[in-house]
Structures are given as structure tokens and as C-alpha cells.
Image 1 (cartoon, rainbow, N blue to C red):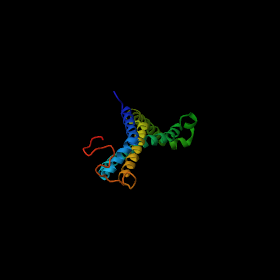
Image 2 (image 1 turned 180 degrees about the vertical axis):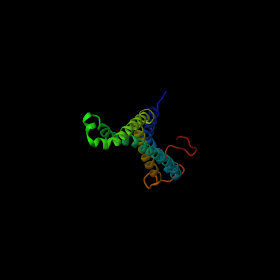
Image 3 (image 1 turned 90 degrees about the vertical axis):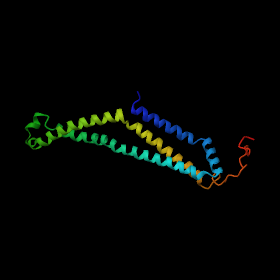
Image 4 (image 1 turned 90 degrees about the horizontal axis):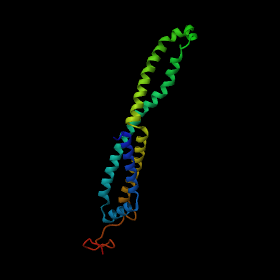
Amino acid sequence: MSTTADIVTAISKFIKALDELLQTDTVEAIIELVAEFGIGAPVKVGIDALVKAVDLILVWLGRLDQVFAIDDMLQSLQPAFEGLTGIGGSDDDAQNPDYATLAPLITAAKAAMQVLDKLTAGVHLIFEAVIPRQAVLSLRESLGHLKETLAELGSKLVSPGKAASKSFRPGSLTGVTASGGAA
């Protein structure tokens, strides 16, 4: 059975392969052909829709950063609680009059440390088993590259240039007859 990490990693590999495919000479030739036929604008509408879909996915993945920040926050709190819970651990501390003043704080810190340990364990379980951070970061990077490639292809369809400035004229394609067959 595949884990979430396996699935996210496979999707990331697929997105990378798709991005590489879109950067081939074959796709470049298709873009030139689309521009030559004069249908670059409608095709760009489709590409723009794909870019928007990728943007939505990137926003959703960005929200996972807020969840990942929980783990970072819990890890940053741990040393402070450990320092507080370490007070009063020796007989000398118990004899110290300041200990009596700090005792409620130390007791609260120990209770908070227990909750913090449980939260940390739960968060680690989620991030290691369910939503691996590295897999999500890799997916987000792959999607970012795909978005750039799609945007570049879209701009080639409508921007003035060699491919986009041509308009289709019947018989302008070399090697193709009027009936659509090869010459």
C-alpha cells in the first residue's frame, strides 16, 4: 500500500516529467504551428486556466507551511520549558526560599511540558507518516517550475515574435497538400 509520502513523491515526479516534456523541441514546434494557424489566443486561454489551477494548488500547499510552523514553534518552546522544569530538581533548590515563590510556575511548566511532549509526538507522527514536509516542498518546487514553463509557453503564443507573428495561409505549411496529406 502506498503512503502519502509515496503518492506526493510520485505526483512530484510526474509534474517534473511534464515540465521537462513541455520544454522539448517538439512542444516548441507545436507552439509555432499553433501560432502559424493563428489560434494562439484560444490556446493561451487554456494554458492560462492551467496556470490558475497550479496557482490554487500552490496556495493550498502554502497553507501547509502554517501547519509545518506548528512543529517549528513546538521545537522552539521545548528548551524554555526544559529550563523551567529543571529548577527544583535538587535538594539545594528545595531549600532555596526563591523556590517556594517559583513552585507554582515550575508545576505549571511541568504540566505544560507534558502537553508539549504529547503535541510534539502527534505533530511528528502527522509530518512523518501523513504529510512529509520534504515531499510537500519538492511538490511545490515542481509545480512552481511547471507554472513558469506554462506561462512562458502562453506568452510565446500571443507575443510578437517569429512564431506568433505568422498567420496561417492555406498551403503555407511545407510538405502538406491542400487535402491535408503529406506531399
